Image (cartoon, helix red, strand yellow):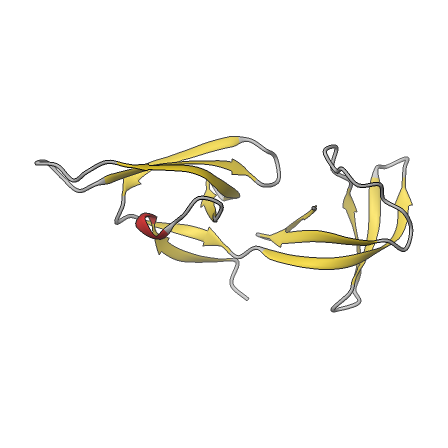
Length: 129
């Protein structure tokens, strides 16, 4: 499965995803200018990195091609929680593979053994929802 696909800037919408500096980011605003006497229309996209929360932006012609990451949302079951290393062991409910991932500082719900959780996979990285 491909990690990303190519799309033109004019095809992107708010709430979708785009790769900026090899990081998958969620688009929060798009502004476009009109085509003028000396060139094509330009687009300015502001986005937030889904893994770090850092703000990033792109300024380019609307016909420029950008990478759009393939975001895979999955369900998993909590097998164990390691408070000392702040990691959680999860079993994917579709493939039944087990793996560990760090617990996000901003994770809202309380994690318990046996609970079902949602997580995302993008660009070979994972994050709890």
